[in-house]
Amino acid sequence: MTIVEQTAGRDADQIVLRPVRPQEYAEAGRVTADAYLASYGDLSESYLASLRDVAGRLREGDVWVATDETGAILGSVWVAPEGRPLSLAAQPGETDFRQLAVAPSARGRGVGEALTRHVIAIAIERGSHRVFMNSGPQMTGAHALYAKIGFRRLTEREGRIEVEPGRWIDLLAFGLDLVNSPSVEIR
Image (cartoon, rainbow, N blue to C red):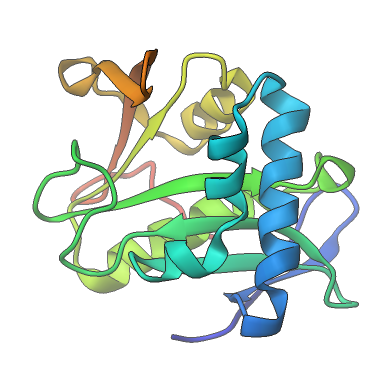
């Protein structure tokens, strides 16, 4: 994988996107859990543990972090490995991602957009025809970001799932078509 540097956000801060390093697993996991808690509040301990488990996520895919010029982790995203989806709803030829998270203190600086555009760049490099992701209905801030970038709802791939025994959520689906799509801009 390559290290990608981008300048993004209102403050024109440098955001460095790169694979998470072993010594950063705990911090990247903490940032992810803190981001979800700040946005969605009532989360079970088992779900928070899964958000903190970067080593576990790496067994199933790749974890990328966004850092500032000092190396502080501003956010992260979990990306499916080529040819093996993270989501049961992902289809062949798609690159999917999960657990996009931005530290509450880093919001508004373009971190989420930089991470999402990086996933798009990975998908294009792989020759994927679509970037796919699922999201909970309460994640409206993320939905606005995805819409801004050009993702559209894939209602035919949405449904109710049991995330823990007795706890169900309505899972939304979003896709960004990459083939012949004039709206795809990497930046």
